[in-house]
Image (spheres, rainbow, N blue to C red):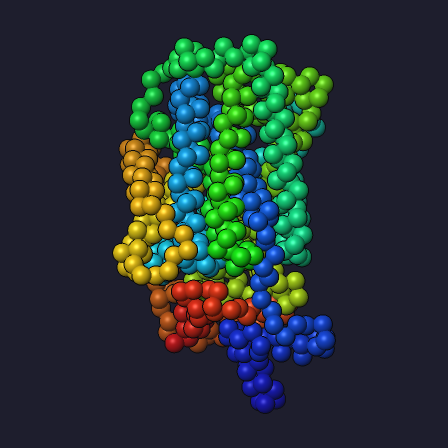
Length: 528
C-alpha cells in the first residue's frame, strides 16, 4: 500500500510539472490509446491572413457600434463633434496598432499587451495588467456583447417592452456555452465561424450604410450640414469630450487582439502587420459611414432616446423588412463573442505559461490542441459577471483600463528601444507614432480623471488589488506543503477530466523569453 501511495504521488508530481512528454505518458497509460495520442502536442499555426483580418475586424465590430453612438453623442453634444470623435478614434487606434505591429514581430509571443509588458517591465507590472484583464476587462466586455446579442434576438418576441431579465441572461449563457464548446473542439472551426460572421456583420453594416446613402441622395442630409451638425445642445467641456473618446474606444476595442494569438498565425512577421494595415482603416471607414447613416435618418433627440439604435433606424427606413436589423445585430454580436472567447483565452494561457496564473490554464487538449481550461475560465468569469447584474455601466471602467494598458504597453516600446537598441526589429515605426499616441493618451486619461474621478478611481483600484495577489500567489514561493499537495492533486484530476497536457513549442519562435517558468514561480505550486 505504501508503494502504491508513493507511485500515485510520483504520478501527480509528474503531471504538475511543465513536462509535456511525462503528462502525455500518463494520459496514454490512463486511456490505453497510445496509437491515438500524438507524440508532440503544440498550438497549431492555422490562422492565415484572411483569418487574421477577420479576427481583428470581428473583435472590433461587436456590440460597440450599436451601443456607443448614443454615449458618444451624449458626451460630445453635437452631431459634427461626434463624427469627429469617431474619425479620430479610428486614427488613434491606427497609431496604436502600428506600435503593436512592431512589438508583435519583435516579441513574437501570444498574450499581446501582457507578454510585452512582462518582458519589458517585469512580472509585477505584467501581472497587474493580466489581473485587471482577467478579472474585469474581458469578462465584462464579453458580458456586454452577450447581453446585446440576447436583447436583439428577443426584441421581436417582446416588441412592446424590454425583454425579461432572466430571459436575456439565460440566452446569453447558452450562447456563451455553445461558443465555448466550439472553441474547445477545434481552432479551425472557431476561425471559420469568425470568418463567416465577420462577413455577415460587414454586410449588415453595409446595409445600414447603403440605406443611409440613399437617404442622403434623396436630400435628407439637413442634420449633416455644418450649420446644423455643430449646433450644440450644450457646450461640452474638455472632460466630456474625453468621455466621448472613451465611449468610442469601447467600439474600437479589439484592434490589438491578433497579438494575443501570435503563435498561431502563419508567418506572423508578415501576416500580423498586413492584417493590421488592412483591418483598422476598413473598420474606421465603416464606423464613420454607419454613424453618418444613423444621422441621416434620425435626429439627435431620437438617437439619444433609443435603446437599440439599429432597430430604430430599421423601423424608420425599412418598413416591413425592419426585422433584418435585429437579426443582423444578433449575427454581429454572435461573431464578436466568438472572437473575444478565442483571443481572451489565449491571454489566460500566456499568463499561466509565465507562472502568473494556475498552471492548469497553460494546458491544451492532447488531440484538438485547444486551451480548454483557459476557455472554461473565460466562460465562467463572464457568466459570473452576467449574474451580478447590469453591465452597461461598466463600459467606462473597461475603457479606462483598456486605455491605461495601451499606454503602458506603448511606453514600453520606447523603453525597449532604449534598453535594447541593437535588437532586430522587422518593423520599426517612426518615433513620432508612439510619442503622438502617448501624448493623446496622457491628455485623455488626465481629463477623464478630472471629469469622472470615481469611475477612473474604481478602474485603478481594480488594477491595484492585484498587488497583494501577486506577492501572495507568485512572489511567495515557500508555501505550506499541504497547499502544494492539494493543488497538485486538483491539477492532476483536472488534467484527466479535460484530457489536457502542457504543449511543446519551438523556443526559436518564442523570443526573447524562451523557457517555461520553473514550478517555483507558479501561482499554484508554491514550491521553492
